Length: 264
Image (tube, rainbow, N blue to C red):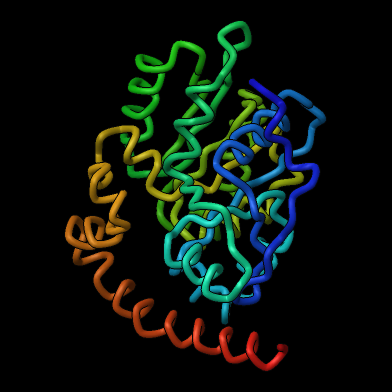
C-alpha cells in the first residue's frame, strides 16, 4: 500500500456543527491501512456523515460525542459535499463507507492477510457476507462475524459477549453494520476495549457484501441519485427518514449560509 496519500497535512472542515476531514478517497484508504500496519493496540474508528447523520447530530449529544472522538470523519453523501462547496469550505469528494470497505479489501497485502470481523446485519447475513468476501478477496480473512439481537446495546451481557469474541479473534479491522446512530455510539462507548486497529461504521455495507441488499447501479451513483434507489428499494423503512431529512437539511444549509455571509 502506497504511503503517498497520507493525512499528515489534512484539514478539518467545520460544517453543521461537525468537523469533517477534507480528504480524498485514496487518502482515507491509505490512512486506515496505516493504522492497521502500526498495530499499536488502539482502535481508531471512522464515521461517515450523510444528510441523515447531519440532521441527527443537531439534537443527539451522544452521537455528537462519538463524532468528536472519531479518528476519521468522511463525507458519505453528495448533499454534504455540495453544501461544503456552496459554503466556500469545499470537501474534495464523497467518500462512502460502502465504497471504503471494499477498497480496503482490494488493497490488502497478500503477504499479510487482512483479518476482519463483521458485526451487524440480520442473522445469517454476515455469514453470507463472510463467504462472499473470502471468495472474492484472497488477501482477506474473515475471522469472525456476529449479528447481535435487537436492543443488544442496552444489554451488558450482550456487550460483554461481543467484546469477548473480539478478544478471541483480535481482528485488524472491525466492520460495523449496526445502522446509525447505534453503530457510532457503540464503537465510541467501547473503542478503548476493542482489540482491533481500526473500525469502520459502515451502515448497510455488510448487507451489500452479502448480496442481501443491492447498491444503485454506477450510472445512478454518477448522477448522484443513490438516495432515490435506496428509498425505492426500502420505502417502509426509509421514506419517512428521507422526507424528514429533505425538510430539515435545506433549513440547516440556509442557516449555515446566513452565518457564513454574516462573517464576511
